[in-house]
Image (cartoon, rainbow over all chains, first blue to last red):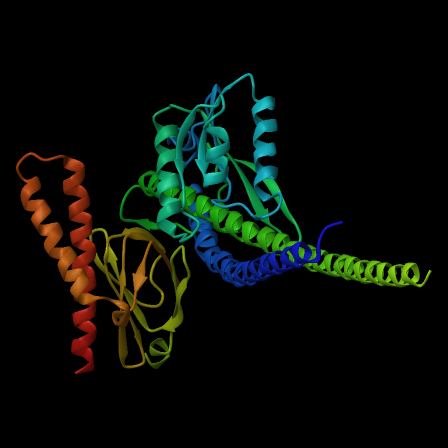
Length: 289
Length: 146
């Protein structure tokens, strides 16, 4: 029978764990709110750049468009997979869902050469030991996520694509739906699908300070950057949401464990007392005889 | 003419981080690639690249200044959309830091003159433009206050 002292120690240690998980839940919740706000604040820029791009597209004909490197679709023989995971664990199935999605992506694309760009430590740690060539990694960017980190990622994929080292760029990341649900999405980022000209009754005829095609090709990298930034923000919000729920569950489990351990401890204590009484009573009975 | 003075332009200034400005203004001036552009209500549609510099807009009798780094501007008769990577109001600018950045960039440019890598020179040039833009905006705003 376990002794009471050991049980008491275990209860204390579970209580400490509960305190930590509760604190982590609070922190993740607060950061989640901020991350959600950032997604909302990033929307106007992405929307504006999209609409400018569409209105310029009307001025640049499609044959000219296909001459621009970021729009040029080639036969896909080499693909760059950008896997956006978290830098840290303790967020439930968040990272393992992503890694599972990446594995099934690799199986589906076994006929093409896939290299990987790992954003986030967890994906990097998982895949650097495996048979997937890594094009690079971006680690520890989530603790202080800035637009410049998105720009660094975008610059790398744009360079690989324009130098024809890869023929397509796919992203796997977690999209933030709500606190309870996130879902893994696989999206093609490059080549950029041909931009449809803005629809409207009349098209605005702009005055240009430089040729439309030039502006167009200057706008495209900015567009890619804003797309990457959005993926990173979504992933961060999803990670924090997953962490909040995981830590909430952990806190609840710890409470349950404390309850059942306390009950068990009391039972053991009572059993010990009962045993002692029986011993005394039977000892006294033996004396009387 | 009285009618014209009441006309407004709707200006939106956005960066990847946030919406910086959404105002109805009388006039706005932008740092275009080939020089500053003054935009009044009813301007012809225009699309241009922006270089780092100062964006100013007039509201009533007041003129406000902002620093913008490079980006784009789309002008429509009563609407201006400015897309830039970074933007700061005068009170947010750290003048000392900008001046130090300016010195650093100037020094690097001098050194790069001796056949250094071209990319470094370009980067220093861009940094110099940003630093000068910041200093200019901060000083302009201070003068206006006096």
